[in-house]
Picture 1 (tube, rainbow, N blue to C red):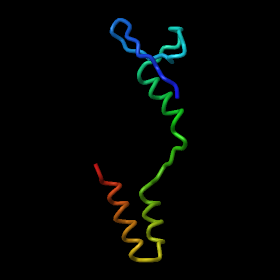
Picture 2: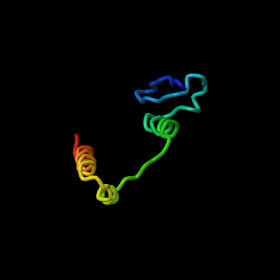
Picture 3: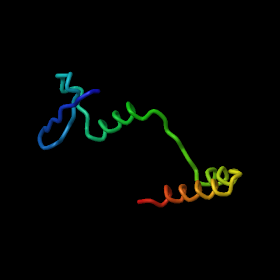
Picture 4: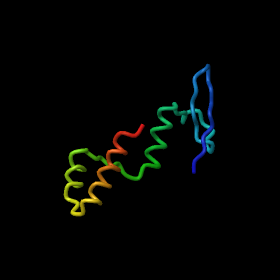
Length: 79
């Protein structure tokens, strides 16, 4: 795992790989977050509600279908 130093220059916050001593490699918070997400997100999954509902309708067992639908509703509207 890579660790970063937080560096404040004239009130602006930057981050730098702790193994690096150059100020050429400074990242803004947004750049750091983007870089970290690229490193840790294994896969991007796009789910559209219509496709999920169609798949739920294909579940043969009524009780299973209802349980899956209830859980899907919970996931959609939990906040």
